[in-house]
Image 1: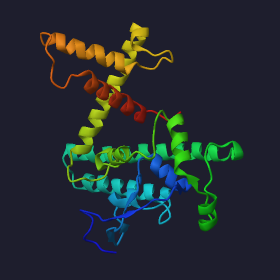
Image 2 (image 1 turned 90 degrees about the horizontal axis):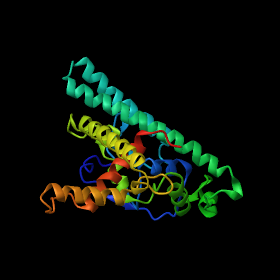
Image 3 (image 1 turned 60 degrees about the vertical axis):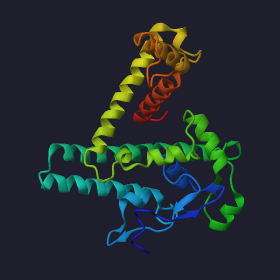
Image 4 (image 1 turned 135 degrees about the vertical axis):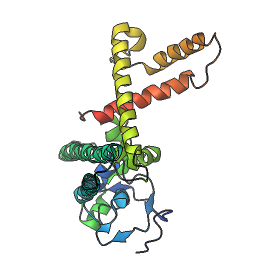
Length: 268
């Protein structure tokens, strides 16, 4: 395989309407979403480099092996830093890398268990079998549309078809691989902690205030809270609009905080 294409990888177009269990779980954790797949991979003596594994089809390497390889790469980087007595910020970044992939593995485990449970329901399962692909490959294939609908309902809007989410969740700083910036993973980890705390604080506020900031289900009424916070910002600015404090911008931040909080918790 060519080895000079990693910086600007070429892509193949993948229009398959279904996927295997492994591929479904990979998509659920944010890998391999969308119709464009990496065409070339950088191959070394150790095989495909860890940062490219999210783009590798599960038919080429089982998902559990890909996750294990990413974890081993993170552990090797940590061990190298420890042996070299690296600065504290670099050690923090590499520890964050290991933590991130461990969290990803736990999520993949939960997704696999719950996906298999849904499949085991047989005719009552919400997942539809792609019989033609199953016959051709000998492996069970399930339509992407049915997996996406099931995931949206079960995991609060999680979509396996959302390219933007896939790009975001595959960023090295998010799941712990080297990206050329030793401090980036640590900054991301601290930001996630702040957003998670913010989400808990807003939910506590909503519980205290009651109906004004809560839906009937008890969920946070993001729109109402964002509107009030935007009005408060304008009032503090002598009743003039305060830059970047529109209701829509605040709503986006609150939703990001809630999404981050969900990512830190065990899936239910």
